[in-house]
Amino acid sequence: MSALVVDDIGLLVTNAPELGEGQLGVLRDAALVIEDDEVVAVERAGADGDERFDAGGRCVIPGFVDSHTHLVFAGDRADEFAARMAGRPYEAGGIRVTTEATRRASNDELRELTARRQAEAMRAGITHLEMKSGYGLDTPNEKRLCEIAAEFTDDATFLGAHVVPPEYEGRVDDYVELVCGEMLAACVRHVRWIDVFCERGAFDADQSRAVLEAGRDAGLGMRVHGNQLGPGPGARLAVELGAASVDHCTYLDDGDIEALAGSDTVATFLPATDFSTREPYPDARRAIDAGVSVAIATNTNPGSSNTTSMSFCIALAVRDLRMTVEEALAAATLGGARALGRDDLGRLSPGAPADAVVLEASTYADLVYRPGVPLIAETLVGGQVRSAG
Image (tube, rainbow, N blue to C red; front, side, top):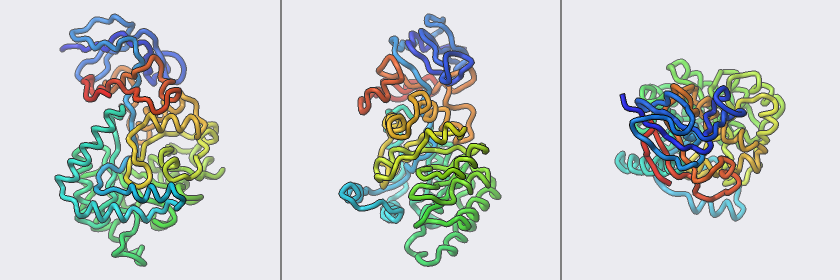
């Protein structure tokens, strides 16, 4: 069995406090020993191996784990974005524009677009991502979106309850019945998760509960879009039902934070969305200090967060969500893994996949200190170089 050594790592973030300094388990002058795509040892620089990858004294961090994306779509909403920057408020109804374009696109077109976006994400250091449906909004289209998502990730999510499509205008309960019945049955074998947009302009608490419980009863894990456009029931519903994550969390009141802190539900912040929609930034500091488990994700989508840059999200989290650099990096790696119920991702310690990012920097602080600079030098998946920045 041959061993690959990633050697001469100036600063290694393991996310395993027992291996190094602080919450990130930082080591200096280190090496990673990799066999069969897994980390088998963390040693001092100069470790023996059959092959050697020279990190050149740079900083190495775990690959980013992006727990909230919408990559399977067609069309463009740049005009909508420009109008919003000129003063028009964000509304969930823009999703229907993407739905029209996605329904018109062929499977091959959607696969090509999705592959292109995933490759862009990998160049940005994202080694694992979740991927939602939600731009089909009828049974045949949601099924094919789930099938395509499952070709790219083992964390595919059924989001038939994204918004109500035009053909069900004024008949929300009828649409929920479709989602919970025929549509779920068509999609369930392709996905690991079910999600719902519990928000004004989308689905209320009772409708969201029905969707989540139907997915749970079909064997799926639960996720929630909640508390994005204003205070609402999403966070507490997620906690009540034992959802893995509630995402957005822009508006959390004291009761929401208390509920999250006493649960295993992760609060996933999507700062690039608040940047793009000009919503207030959430107070992640308050949530963290209360003991809430948190994650950061990109929410890559055409309407409210058209970016695959986790580095950008980390910089926003530190500046505007009041996280420390260490908290933000942990949230974008180990936090994302927890939001997906994964204990195998987000760390570089023995037994973990050898998914790592080599930064063109001597310290991870440069992700925030040098915002907008392309610092992802190499992305390794299973110890193999999959993308160079």
